[in-house]
Image (cartoon, rainbow, N blue to C red; front, side, top):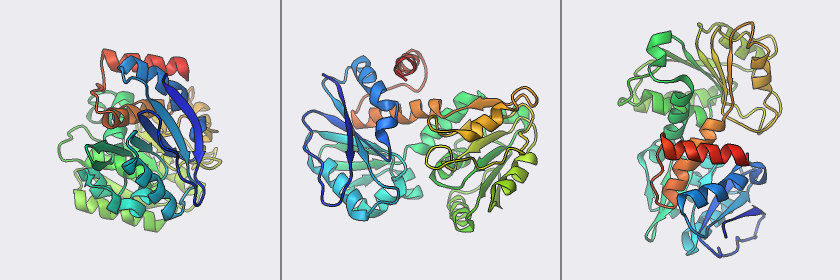
Length: 326
């Protein structure tokens, strides 16, 4: 029987119990509130994964390095622990446990984070899937050829790991469909410099602006200056990991723009602000549900070593199963 077990709370000295069946872990903060706990059993049955389980692992934000090492060590040593999806802790977990991984994919090496932990034989493998999944989600939202057709810009409010991942995708030399300009704002000059240095290593195939925005009114000014049909993204975590929005209610979204929140659950004030302008500014409001679908299906494919298409009949069926269980 496919099972979704209650979240295991990470406490000092407490160890995960041995898995009783092939298990994927969800390493996050409030994993029990995620839709994946009800969605996964239906997906696993449809994909023919057999008698498997998903277990949530709740860690504190910026938890102690030994906590991350304990979780990763368990996955590596336990025979029936197949791998994990990592959210929120992607940077901290890899920093604390880098030596426990036998293989890191090029994105993980470049960004310094892991969102997917899997096994191949006796090797523990870390992938940074977000550059792939965020790009798939963006393409699904705007459609093919959007950027040259519209001239819209991409605005990322927040310079954390999610923004790094999406911009890595868009600046990849192999990608041709990209905005003419990307604007990244953050309240931390240090974070903006980190993203800038990452882009220096990749190379800029489009114009990128790094805007220091200490407060919400500064973000308002950034958004107000965007051209029509731009895509405005809440990449701060506000609305899920913390209360509020990166904008004030005075912000004016560009006409015919997309307001996209990377999150799909929580008190998404940013999207509430955008909804007030759907009629007057023709703003399209999009939550993180499509990102959720691509994020989880890519990691499940890696952990259980199965092929899951990113579009077409199988992916649409997985979407239907997820919607019915949401």
